[in-house]
Length: 153
Image (cartoon, rainbow, N blue to C red; front, top):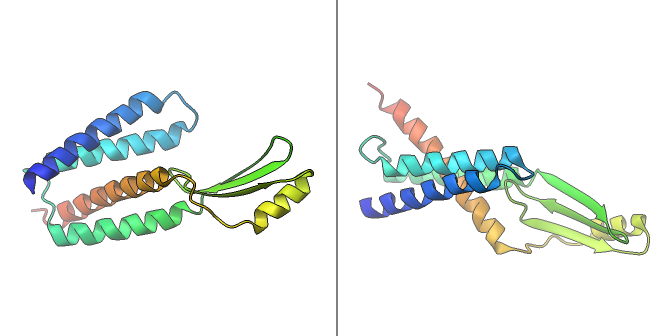
């Protein structure tokens, strides 16, 4: 179990730092900064089992709750766009947009009406996995902070 924790910590730390280096010059600076810092910090927590104890059951419960609440709260972030010869699309999710719906028509109002009636789709399952991983690592950080305060001497 310790080897898995160290491996996951190393991968997460490298992923977070790489994310920061590659994405800080693009649009979405704040989102990319938050994602990179959370992943790098979670990687460090996982790499330091001698400094940060993570009891299995409380950590699993806290991580699961934060992941589910984060995924649900992320759906409150909405982005809509009218483009082309009247295509209207709406995306939901944070930090990655993983739900969308849209439609196209000959008039912009018709495209918006059709999009409002369309059903939500998950076009890219990779974005769902990215969201789950981000929120799980955020939950791990919450668990580490709670655990540190609980056993402070």
